[in-house]
Length: 273
Image 1 (cartoon, rainbow, N blue to C red):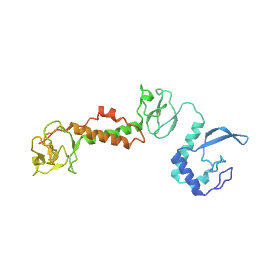
Image 2: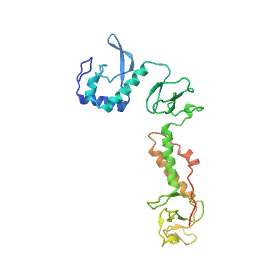
Image 3: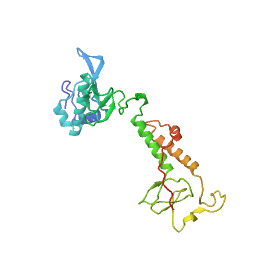
């Protein structure tokens, strides 16, 4: 195949890969240098078609050549980007673009200021920042999607570190203790140790716990029957939060210390015997 004005020749595979990289990788059709009398100027504009791969050529490819080289999926995305590029280059007043599905439409002037209500996916976005529409809140005060996702990851890790889960595979109910000893009874009948979180066999029951007063439990290797787990839980929650924050740090910074001051609420279950 060849570009339609420069005559540069390429194989179909090269054109296919070039187009796929543009429409799925970069997300635009490139930049086309403007020229006067055949000489490129300093100014450039968005390309309205896939450009030739030769560095000194701004020609495109005929549609039939693209159809020979590219799949229907690639062509559909290419047509979508081309449509968007043509509309944007026309400088039509009042255009809005959905940040969720990239649909472009003229904004209804009866809509509230800065609201773009996408006619295709129905998502309501702010025309200034592209986030979900936030009437009465400045754009710099709005939490971005990455920030929300990062905070949610940390919150879920904190909750998992704090709540207990029934160890029986067919149950897996979650619970917290409000008071009492560390031998918990799940609604399924399973005995659970609130300290080590393991199932306690029925024939073991309270023998799972240390019965010696003032024992430090390092030599007996048993769990305490009565113990304030709040301090230990706070350590677990902090470690879990820090670990989760590190897992998302390439996308967003999560203020773990601020979240630890106001940890996510966890549902409290009644203690049963």
